[in-house]
Length: 482
Image (cartoon, rainbow, N blue to C red):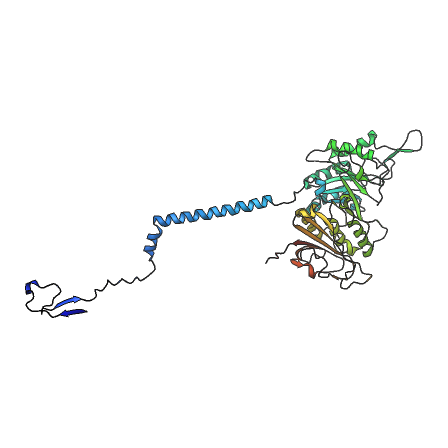
């Protein structure tokens, strides 16, 4: 917009017109001087060539290097923190165990392998042939019973019962046992180790004599790993154990220790083994029957009562366990689970690992093998703490009446790992009430069952136990914050 001013024609000359006049003499002056219009910025993505040019620039390389450096610094800090937490966290230290604390012992009578009208293979040779099979199951030590003759007085401990085999065959047995990784021990229980005193008809204990010392030394030189004696034997005494223990130490080495084993045959042994200590125990292994000996197979109620008494024994007095008394066939598997999950060295007798009615003796038993593998793999089952879990007497179990055997349970714990072992010895199924164990974690996973038919996760609030069943469950803490 311009403002036109009419002036005097004589004012000024044409040659002297101002730059703001028109040709007709009028003067024009801009009223408003417009500002420069800004250029509009239009955004568009970088092309491939432009992006490669920017990414290869020095500023971007510097930024990327710093970003990678920060990532590794943060990662190392997190790793160091995690390691420090693990190191400082309290955890139980695995004890150093001797071989007799880790092995599974297997009591075996060579006479059981005696075949009528067959002199080609002796019972001792048949035991040699069976060693690889026993090792495949997980057996670490074989205890030979009935190895010496019982009809001589005193027993000749340097002579094998001729009906079982010869000395060269026993030597081959030791060789085969070393190849298979199985130790061999000799059982001296119920042998007459007395000899008549010269000049009269009385008998005296010859355990301190050169004869018995020579006999034990004789077999130790052949490679026997130890001997067993019963607490009911007349020869059983602190003096005897002292002399035999000295001999065991003489033949022991760091890689090949020799031991003495005492089998308790009654609830009131002639001598308390726990009191026989001179710079440590004179007996490395003490075994006791978890089921009392009887002339007839015990009923489920009698077995449950015996189990409950044994499970409530103070743990510091616990020996290693063997089956002992006769039980009904349907309870064999449950008792086997009990022996293999209790603290102490399990001592299994030939035939306890199978049911002759259902399973042939020449085939591996999956339950027995699974129990041995779990015990060797899981520290809680090997040397974990034991806790007996008594059920509330006022608690009613579904399907129970006054004549039905109630369930039994105990816990093996090591650190944060817990194994719950449940038993239903009765002939009826039991459904446990949801609040039967409020202090235990609610969730777990099946490890072993007598029927080898339970797998996967389980809730303790929904367990229904079948008749004559034993179950092992590995418990784990649930994440309550989620």
